[in-house]
Image 1 (cartoon, helix red, strand yellow):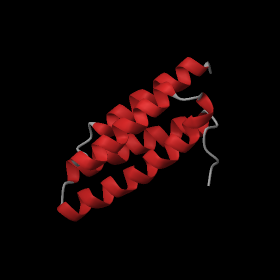
Image 2: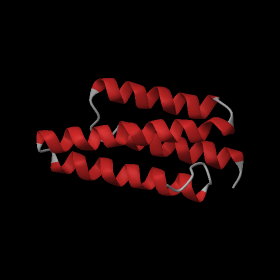
Image 3: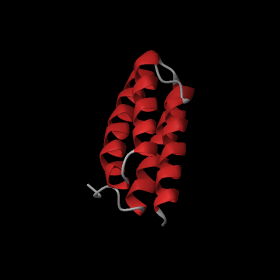
Length: 95
């Protein structure tokens, strides 16, 4: 995979998470992570993805707590896509 593809796909997946019904604070954090992914070194994509996946867990728990099933499903789907991409791109260790 080219570096441009890695950055671009990470950015798209973070944007999907940002649009998945995140509260304003989490949406800002996801936007910050997306900017970091787009402007930082490719070697920084792993830590960005780890933080985004942590935020996804928080989003999913919050959606469940509120009873927001559609939001939960969107966030789970986006988070799973991000995790799968990062594992395939070897940005994360499979734990």
